[in-house]
Length: 166
Image (cartoon, rainbow, N blue to C red; front, side, top):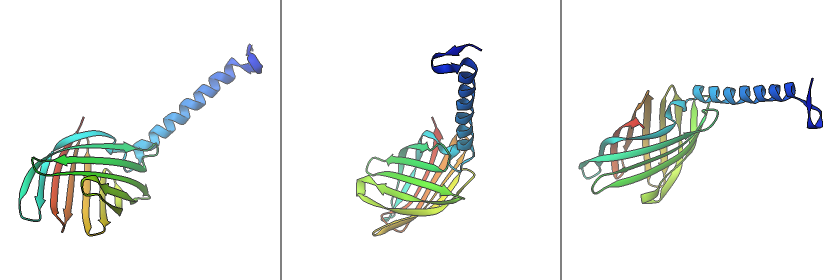
């Protein structure tokens, strides 16, 4: 057996390389099994926002999701705008055995708070709250299509968005 410097054989290096590849593939496999695995990436689409004054406007949206290596953690940004309205929603969540918890913020109104709910099989259902604001949010992902629904009693009464990955 031929040795390289410090007595490490070529077979030991190959074994270490195979071990590293197995660890990387195991962590990639875990990401595919977490509740957020189908969310990863950039999304865009359109929808409507219903305001407390009864008006409804068409909105254009972009979302970006970053899923951690286990598929149990998710960072989300969702930016939507119409000709006269916009919101910039960010969240950072973790799922433990299907229960979701985390924080969220809306930059254009400078509000932030906590969220809690459930996640499984490409769907997140959460209740978000902050001082003077509360809403139910559902995000459902099936393949390259995603729907986002927000319902509240505040300035924003309802949001319905359809997004496509890519």
